[in-house]
Length: 611
Ligand code: C2O
Ligand code: CU
Image (cartoon, rainbow, N blue to C red; front, side):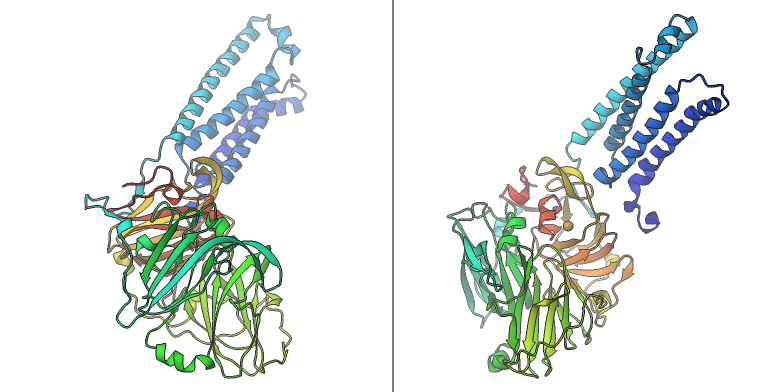
């Protein structure tokens, strides 16, 4: 069944696991069978060494098959095969030695005088020696192969290889230094520091913060403005950076430590500057040790409004409700309050309302908006085409993802429920101070809205049949090197960061990704610097609005196809946004031909990569 859905699900089971089981079973039948029969007919000699050895060998082989499945997975290598086979042989030889060793089996000793028995013993010795020699050679060869450095440091996805084009350093790929005509400069200083922060619940936590606040300062701009942020590190000893999640900044502003800049150590600073060209809901976070830093509070929101709406907004701001709502879990408690810490908002009936949900956690959240029909007008900051009105649905919000929910406030209360917890979340109250929290029905069995079938189709800027490169990423768990250490890792094509080959692209390439999840956990896949267009999930094409995202959740057993045009030169992180997974290996780089980096360490790997 699984093979019918893709070879990547079953390769090692079919090529090694099943044959091993078959061989062991055959050996057991052929060796132990006749003895067993003879014994049943009363003609056995009472000795069952062969049966014992073969039965145990069958057990070792079966076990080996399971071990390969759980510790190695896809792809199967010659080294794995050699080591596995020789370990099973070693097990068989040692078992045979144990059951036939003189002294353990006195019958052998008694018979040792007879010439026939002597011949049998020397035949056994021959088997032991050849078997032993095989085991030693195969183990040696297998281990040797597994320690060979990766044959390639890049993968080409079917496109042409590296050219000798003039090198371009990421350090030179910096953002504009002035706003578009008529735009403003939005200046911020963000100081990363440890602080004790009071959560909306009243509880205090030891957090890592930007400017002593969690979330950090809300950065807002109007399209065409220049955003200029000076990041200072006061006392975060691990170091910090700022990554503009989903915002397609020039590569030198991307905040990937060891790749686009050095980590900002305590006492140091770094200035980010870029034009706010994209409208929508985004966020920023540290990209150094982000599995710790983001969790502890090093994140904030970034919202850019459209330029032509600037005047209209100024006139009607008072009549709008526009809430930016990062969802974050502290010590097991989900918080969804905006910066004012309010979880209840008086909202007069008829108020045009926009809720900007941002999942800043590493796990997905289920969002239900109860009490009003609404539209999901934007996903990951990008507007959908003709999003229809929905109600009584659950929304699956991937880690790192954003949804903009838009509706007119009704004259009854509205509740935003996260993870079906009806006591938490957010309340909008139509009549000022009236508590009026109407009873909320159980939301847990509401069906999930499928964004691949939501909204109306529209023209997309490319035809996927013209793809220049096609990269497949098979996500799994297994033993692999992560930062040079053998780890039970989250792997991509069997490898962990930084030993996963870079994906090479040329400026202008149309690139296709196939992402396959063989593991038991959800992987929110995230590419820096480019939104991707969802083509299909499990072979079923996306039929709703074109869906451009920067993070898509690949759930266990799923296969996603996405595509993008490579038009933002640089070296870009391409990783799972379950940040502990990324830290445990699930991270690689998309590398534009001709781009180099002077930086090393962290995401660059110890060897750096001055390709
Ligand atoms: Cu939101 Cu590479 O990160
Ligand atoms: Cu993951």
